[in-house]
Length: 406
Image (cartoon, rainbow, N blue to C red; front, side, top):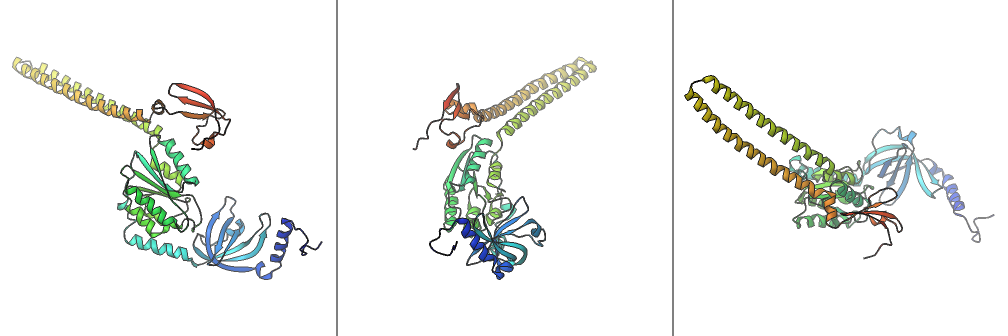
């Protein structure tokens, strides 16, 4: 069969095999050294390294297997300029050609990394990253603004964690473009909008992982200055734990991931309830100790009065005892009143966080009957799913119907 004739219909596998054969026959591509800039560098659990080699004209996928990677003499990172030696071949399963790297050498800083370093050093010299400029996070934020893309996984993770840990928190999503040419102006507009709102206590700024190019908006000077100018504390949560942007240095707190940012933003309701219980117990113990100390003091006065014998001295001591008794009663009353007010505030706080109070206002908790999971999103309840609806007055079994489009 002559696959070169136009009348023949080729399979995908046949075309891929023909391309692979042509590439493997090229002596230059079978052993070559390529200069470029690292991007989207990732190390998998297998120990293999995957990355993109790029320049101003094109990009080339690369893989370095664990054995070859063990011989590296530097830590590769996005933005570094390198020389990669190896062979170009086709990964036939996906029909992609890539460079199989056997050696990687440092070749200086890439253009993006150099720009990153210059801007970071200049802003650091201005004092924008000084520790004393950082603001503490509020212990109990009432309203949290999230600045990110509305369609990414990052926003879903942050909203879920915030509501799980602190149900009383109110969440405001300020939508922004987080990648591309429009990202920096969009992020700045969202940060400036926070300044026009008077009830925001904390800002979560972030997005999911990506290459250095994907995250570059968070290295733009205008975005960094907008973070510094934000009137409320900002938690930066850009990319993965190994990704660092200049916004991370300018923010009040840097989180490793968007999920970590949500955990830093609010306390955990169960731990707070336990803490309040411990405070109440300590207050009761301190009050009891004060009363016992006063009682022992009165006993000592009484003993000295009886030992003094003469009636005049005894009368003076008895009068003194009456005065001290009256002062003790007043002091105990004041301590009791302060303790009662404090306990009342704690009780009010816990009552506000009680899920049953939320149910009493007309809300319901929906759990899938098959696994007991609480539904956080309509996607958790496909049509026909058996649901247990917990209301203020009891529970009902329901069946999920079709989603109604508003």
